[in-house]
Every structure is written in C-alpha cells, then in structure tokens.
Length: 249
Image: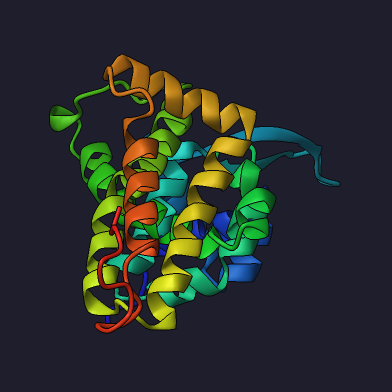
C-alpha cells in the first residue's frame, strides 16, 4: 500500500491535533524541516491550511501556528480513504469531531447529540462517503459548481443529513425484505427512528433541513415517508401463520 505523501501527513496530523507550528509538525510527523516547509507552502496555496501569528521564538523569529480550513478537513479525510484506510479514520472519529467542531459546527459541533442517539458512526460514514466527490471538485477548480466560501461547511453538513435521510426509506425496505421476522429488522427500525429524532430534535439542524425541504417544496415528505414505512412494516405479521386477516397498514 502506498504511504501518505508529506502534505497529506501534515493534513492528517492537523486533523487530529488542531493548531501546530512547523517545529511541532516536524517532530510529530518525523518529516524533515525542509519537507514540512515545502508541504506547508503547498497546502497554503491550495487553501487547505491557514497560519496565524503565535508570538515570537527566543531567537526573535515570528512563530506561526497552522490549522485546517473546512476544505482542508475534506482533503484530510479523503487521503486515507484513497489508500483504503477508512477503519483508521472511523476509530478516531470522536477525536476528529472534537478537534474540528469549529470547522463544521452543524456536524462535528453536534457530535454529542449524535452519540447520544447512537448514530455517530452512521453519520460519520455518510460524511466520509461525500468527501471524495468534493475533494475532486476542490482539486479541479474548473468543475466547481458552487463557491467554496464561509457557508461551505454548513452546505456540506446539509448534504450529509439529506443523503442519510433520503436513503432511509430504501434501507427500511431492504432490511424488511431481508429479515421480516428477526431482531435485525426491529433494530433497524429503532435505528431509523434515532436518526430522524436526532436530526429533528436539535433546533439548528432542524432549521437547516426543513429550510432545504421547503426550498425543494418537499416539506415533511421524507419524514412522512419514513414514518409510514416504519408503521407499515412494524405492523406486518411476524410469521406466516400470524396476522392472517389483519390489516398490514
């Protein structure tokens, strides 16, 4: 398997460690100082990282600390995925969320809510699945169809929520067909309720989602569809002999 490039090593480190200066980056990545300087130059040019003044060293030289931008986080998450290392990311999802809450306030900033409802892994997987598409756009400016500006993190978070919500009806049907009587489907129904409850109980997320649904003129459509499917399949007979003559919803 190909190793991470030097710039990607810097991105990965900043994703997990927040603000660091060049000396700290070299120490933690074990890259030479020249490699670190070169990597920072490349990443700043791509707007993946930003540096800010952090005082002066004893020698009098100015110190800069570097941190990721929202699109830098997308690039950082994409790098290990391209090497087939999603499990590495998944194991560190809580650390990634904690360190990048300010970059994605409506996603990583709400991480405690997602964990409380046990949907953090599901949402993280959805988040990661959309990063490669955006990374392609970021890396090829001519195909960018929207401006990557201050609202980028919120628009990306919305896409994650909508991607998951719109996939739920399909997932419910697949789960029901695969396991009509067992615990797997019952658990899946509970998980789907958790997803919608988590996303609709938080006022910031609910506002974001329902404004998008209203824009599409689909307000409540997804919620109604999910609830009808859950109600229908939850009332379905538990065995062939059970429920004859009963209404299936």
